[in-house]
Image 1 (tube, helix red, strand yellow):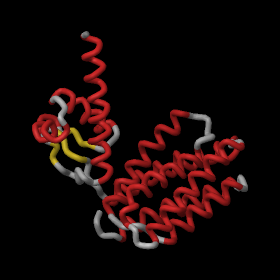
Image 2 (cartoon, one colour; image 1 turned 180 degrees about the horizontal axis):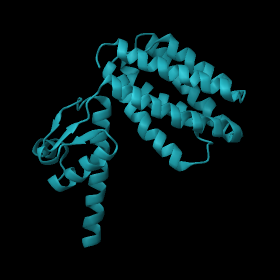
Image 3 (cartoon, one colour; image 1 turned 90 degrees about the horizontal axis):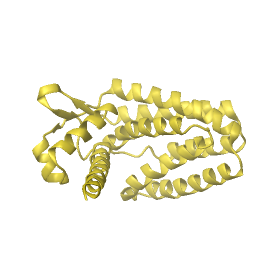
Image 4 (cartoon, one colour; image 1 turned 90 degrees about the vertical axis):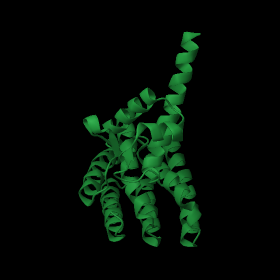
Length: 223
């Protein structure tokens, strides 16, 4: 009975963690928002002790700032932090991309083709003005980049990249604007270079792609 109760509590904690984390990334919990435990309890339905554990986990991901006796707040969004996150993403993703392009097999190619197709469809819808597709685009954008590096051979590297990618995409969601045809062209170029296993030009394209994303977010004036 005690084990069943513990399993239920752990399940609630996991669901609540994902909800709060998702709300921070999506900007529903905006940068620098004070995270008061009583308000979070009412909103997410978890106990104060569970929420405290969750916020400490999010602090370890740099999505939340622990302020000692003053509690917690959502991590601020600054140009300097955006550039720092972008540099870290590029470091991890370019390394994983080199490994993946060297090792990728037919199954890897299938994953990349499928991910690129879904992303292209959603990007076309966005270009046609269907901005309701933005969150779907976020999922497919990650799925495409994840597919490109999925043959890198390191689950640790993939997990680190996913966590940093979320911190990067948070800035795009805060900017609340789609980069348009240019980002679609970037993804098509990355896809074609990857299919040719053209490693260094693919890494150069990735570098340009991430830098353009940073420039776009900063030009939005929302950070």
